[in-house]
Length: 263
Image 1 (cartoon, one colour):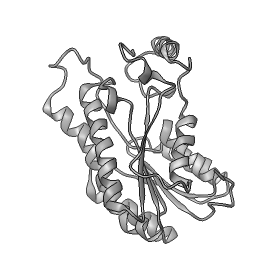
Image 2 (tube, one colour; image 1 turned 30 degrees about the horizontal axis):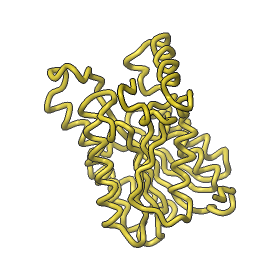
Image 3 (tube, rainbow, N blue to C red; image 1 turned 45 degrees about the vertical axis):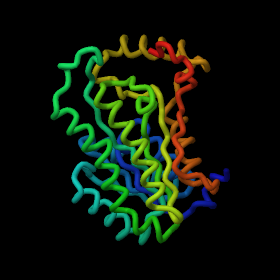
């Protein structure tokens, strides 16, 4: 796929949850491809602004927008901000997500409020954001990429509620692919564990390093994907011309092949 700065120059991408990790990597990759970027953050304003500065350094325009995608009013305002500034939206990357770490063997570790919050962001929020941008995406034969998770297939992850939400996001991807065809392609990238700070709130530095080493060791490819790897897969869907829609691409270094006891 041609990702040169000229082939996609002037396209507009909205990337939710772009203040760090996968979202920041995807936003920067899109900027390098020539796209203007609306990057959202929820609580990490410094991270959101850092992402925007990195995108601008690539010669494109970029804005940081505070947005809680669980609130429909925020989704509508974000789509309007991008459309007002650039007159179009070509790409939507639904990356924003949340979790609560909980031992899957302890069924008392999660309550209804945990499920409600996680689903509000990981499922309902992605639906609302896609709906808010749908008209612009249709006009520009656009592309939506949902950042889901291997958890949606395996049931393994930071919590049962998180895994369930990603399973729901996978089926949402299929439904939206039908709803927005033929003008908009909707696909999902489903990472396994990625070398980011996602688990930094649960594990100290030494424990996190040990977990990464262990996780890499059990993958067939003996390494864990980076945020940049996920960004590369995301851009294949977002900017490529292959007529693929309703696809769920697992990027986990083959962890899903270790069926018995992956982690």
